[in-house]
Image (cartoon, rainbow, N blue to C red; front, top):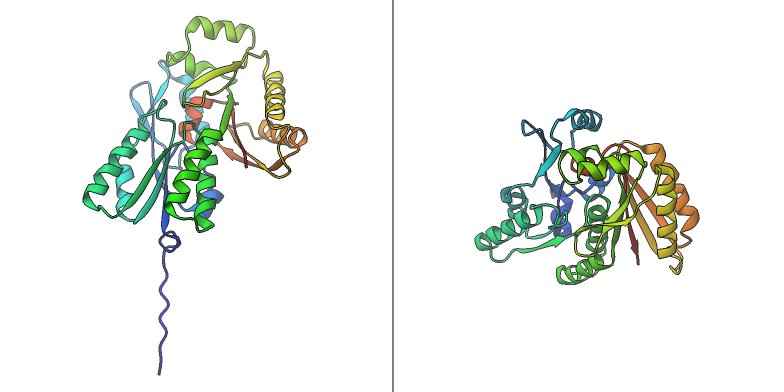
Length: 299
């Protein structure tokens, strides 16, 4: 009699290259199931006495309430090197995606982890991608890498394509509630007061180097959203059909996100898809209630 034994394997090992992200990557439960990454959690620190680990179980409504009631604002703490090193040790080939190195120490922690693990296991292949972005931008890069892994490209090919992708990707965001930025000192009280009195909802983005820059000051959230659509439409006016993917992260404003998604579909003729997700706890810290983040990539 002949017996055939079928072993159940982790599909990540079968595919060969494993993805590791930090928790600023706004992965929905559906995307987590599809990509199956390891996630290194950042922490949200409120008033220096409350620490919340961004492990995917955070109640965003409760977090927003704590942020609004805080006296001194909120800040973040990056994952430890060991948070990245543990999954690196479990896989022969790894890609790591982090929030911009100019916004957090997460990238440096991941690089340190890679050095540690390579000293222990010299044959492992590990590459750390600085997304030079956050939130929707970090997710955009993660989706791209997952696609290339699925296509069966080599480790080295994907590294080259991924680094080129980072240079072309663009991320923009609108913050409606400036309260946490003022409390934490990222925005002066005078500037914050002026913005609040004039109902200014600034459109901001990354400068290509992972730093935040002001794109335009707009009065009123609806005008700001319309202007954002105009900017994206102008940037993508010459795009080929089905060549654009937009990732849209929103902070507790699903109706606003749906409206924005629909306007983007109308304006961007080359649009292939809009992927809409809720901000993670870490992204919520920056976007705050009503904030939206979009990442645009043209293939």
